[in-house]
Length: 308
Length: 266
Image (tube, rainbow over all chains, first blue to last red; front, side, top):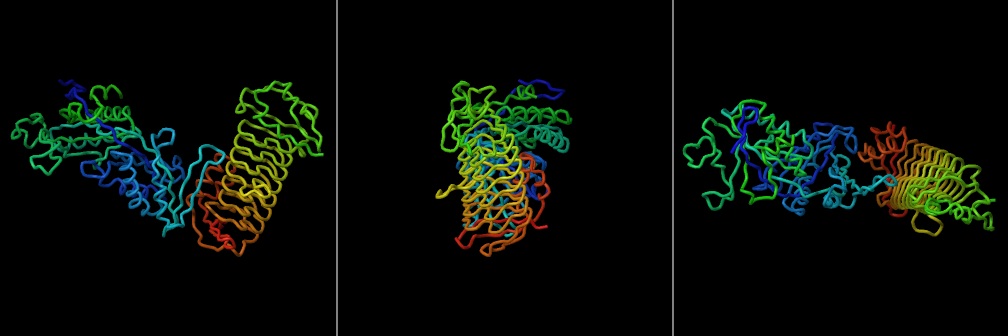
């Protein structure tokens, strides 16, 4: 079953999302360049929990007037399968990639009221100060008190909030863009990622937001837990008997989305599909699911488009 | 003759009948009076303290304990206020359009006091014999502050826009003091630290020899406080120090403390 959307065939299917714990961090630095360097480093090697400790990505750049210390900022989102794993990944990545990066500071990106849990990442990180860390409180007499830690470092001082909000979030939103040739398919996918990032609280953890090597569960090799998504590999569409790659399709790119809530992921998928279709050169769009066995969230492609 | 009027708080006045309010006890010297014998009382009474606003007008410079132990609501004093204003308060807001006498905000743990003119001695401090002074909340004084401001300060923030008399932050063990006027001698004497600091923007008359100079740098955290002072508390002069380097002093070594004093470096 499929339907037509602006001349492009869209499978009437759904992407299957599942629950992960998500957190959001705002990194600030002396300028946009260093905020982005820190963010890029922290979100490196965090595309998929198939082989990474977490999934992470840059959500957006935050203008200086909107950051707590009024410096240039970048918002990062990190996702893990449990609170413990998420907290551990955040601690390691902040410690190795942000603490080390010149001029940075970090702040919680999910207010306590909107969080399911507060992770004491900053409280652990403070121990790097070797006893010379200094605690600091803000908002006395003005509102909810917030605690920070100031850690002396060689360049000056590193500032971190003590607690970081985390909540049960949604991972696994996806859709596949199928095109006739590589360049136009890539351009359509790029447009889709741009559109997705207009929706707050959503990330696309793969390189540039795109995954050109989607995987299936298992392999003919017993020691591999995932292998290439053979039904969607156009180069073997006639060799592989159960291929799902249409006749005129020679390039397929997958976009995977994680978000803090179901509606954001659904809307972002809708915006992404729309943008890909409008870019031209796309033959078909579909999504990956496991018949509802993987997770409780079903993002119908039709419903996603309607949500926009 | 001073008047002790600790019943002038939203917590006590809210939800009462006017007749009950008129009979609230106040002391003039050692004699008890009804509130209505010393004050003209009028206006609306809120059902809850949080919605109660109390306006205090007239010559109230000798009226003590206004807003003492209040937890919510608001008090506006049109003129000056006597000693112990807002002492031990836990929440709510007090605005004094004139000056306040000694012990304002003593041992307060929450809420906000705003003084449009000057404050007396022992602002936000501990009472004699008590181990902790202010443990939370915020005091902003638009003018000068007297001696031993923030003595035994534990948590909370005190902002003085004018000059600060000697012994500011004596024995402090946490909390923050922001001084935009010149700060007199012996600031931070016997301060232990525990995350506490004194930020001086208008110079320091003399630093204690038991504070050691560490470094001159632009602390990022200071930007956050200055932003808050400028945007949320109307301390406009704070904005101009956003990118100012500060000299960091650490002490008081006389008591093994790690309190910090930041002095704006021009």
